[in-house]
Amino acid sequence: QNAIKHSGSQHFRVSLKGGTSDIELAVRDTGTGFKAEQAFKGHGLGLRSMKERLKLVKGTVSIDSELGRGTTIHAWVPLSRTA
Image (cartoon, rainbow, N blue to C red):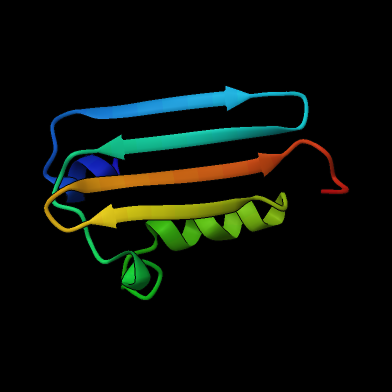
């Protein structure tokens, strides 16, 4: 929902990969992009909420975004509690 609201893109690629040790979700768009280093400092709750939820399951989130070229957000979760 946030990707639609903020990216200006009409098309998105979503992939979900699972293995025996982890799960990875990637959401890509070709929209407006943003400064990734400021993503978690903004007023919105979307990315901060995602980061906090992933932290609860020892997961991580990364952002690759370039102004005018789009954004890819990766969420990774280990399936083992010892990871």
